[in-house]
Image (cartoon, rainbow, N blue to C red; front, side, top):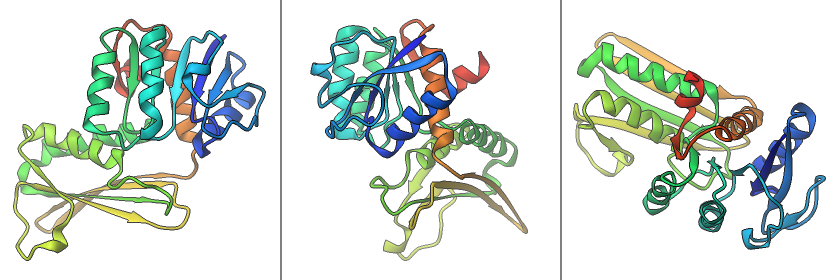
Length: 252
């Protein structure tokens, strides 16, 4: 039985994860939830701070907000508990903490918990290798009107995977409307749309002379992210200290 501490348990994703474990995973259980809202909604206790956790666990799933990340990471390091970091919008300093923590505990960190999204990241990278610099690259991401970070972590992940092919020589253009100039050949445009209840959509566009190639992923529900994070938690319990991603789990 994989015993899980769920940080952000009363958030939208936390509730989906809790329900998914209850309905679909006989080999997993949430033993404690952490949330500023301590209302008990499932069959586990909820505390407002990691310092109040009084049970042992095999792994932590952090699906919260950047403001709630620091304390759970300190707890993970102090108790030597593996942690799945699914929170987006983290600062460079927080990402540095993740990398440092991976030297002493197993840490699973990816910008998107969907298997499909990680697949299109691989496909986009392969397309960039084949097409080279003759094609302009643009990324469009769409999310619901409650999402606070922009661009999405997934859009940046896609851009980074493509940029690796170009030896990280490309610059990211987020604000093209603020200048009056032609598009340069060393940029990747990243555009954000926020509206309604869109769960998540990402499109990578390779625009060349007389032809356009598009790679698209659409999330129909939050369930795919819950499934990914739970599977990552199970995977991490057998890992040595280190930094892991969806690529590691897929290739196992």
